[in-house]
Length: 99
Length: 157
Image 1: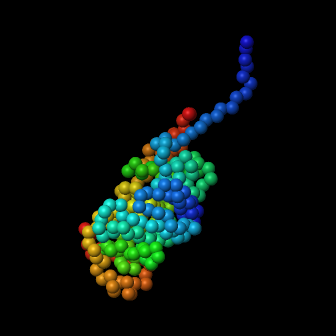
Image 2: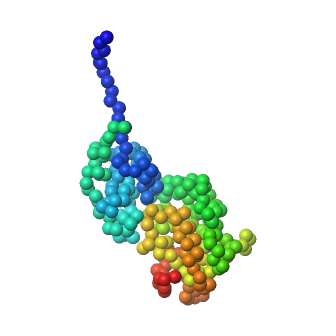
Image 3: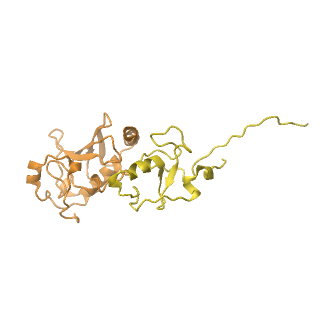
């Protein structure tokens, strides 16, 4: 028997490449969900990692960093919060993986 | 933005503590997302606080958790809820704790972590006394707790 595929649809799922049970310390929402202001996870509501290794929704950490009282510090460890601009957490395309 | 974050975070916290509240803590009321009351007991046998229950009042602004909540002990006759004796707790219930000020606050803190810090602050105390200048402070203070710049007389307590 010969089967001819006329059409196919690819379906992929993705998730952030971080531990399963991790929540954003600021909004306490799971990283697979969005920050409280966004509706769709992914490119529109990215995660940012600090060099100290702590992750947050970008919108959450930006909201904190703009406070004077934040003094530019990571909410978790109080080290100066510097963007970790490696591919790992900033480029959602690099995180896509089939599951 | 801020309003959404505050209400969403508090509703998550409420769901969690309604489900399981840590030892020594009882949620008394949380009818909205502006003010909650929680009863607190000390977990060890510190004779200063033995068989006593204390009542905490939390006030949340719409900037929570970017700004700390205002947390004070409140006194009540029935049921008896005294203000705990502690060198950092004024007799009007105002608490001097860096975590609750703009400088010590972090948005990863939450209602439960504040309660646990207060429990340990009481557990570790052995001095049956009020802060220096308590009488004058209580008589004259009109500032809200978060606006007071506490002078930390003794960081070792």
